[in-house]
Length: 164
Image 1 (cartoon, rainbow, N blue to C red):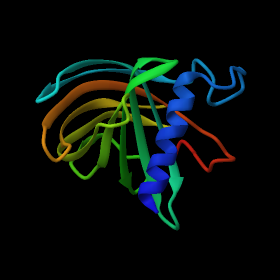
Image 2 (image 1 turned 120 degrees about the horizontal axis):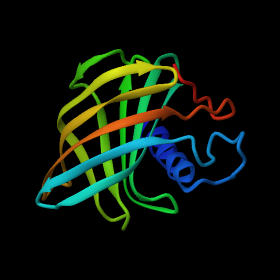
Image 3 (image 1 turned 180 degrees about the horizontal axis):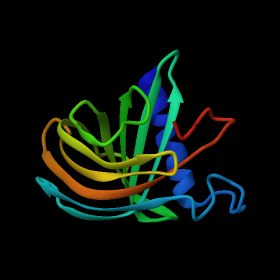
């Protein structure tokens, strides 16, 4: 169930980044995303620059925090990173209990996080800021993803997404 919800939110995030709706009151419209800058090193390399958003949702009785970082143009992100952690929106601190993956634009490459940390330097309903230092694998290749983010809340009552 969680993987289906994660994939669904990743798709919602890609729509949000693409600016679907365009209405100023639409949570998926332009201007409702924060910033993300980072790098991929290892067997694959890339510079990452794009958007950051977070939401909290109820996964059958427990709150789950999801952080979504994208790279590339708003119309077509080249990378989507999705991080999930049970327990609602985290406070300031360094966490090593996030699950997640990075999806490449081709759709053929998915790297699952297998270690590292997410450091939260500021956490509130208006934004969650911090840095990542994550290792990931596709089963053959290994990468390290580092970067900083200033995320904004992606809130949507119909989808059950809150700011925590």
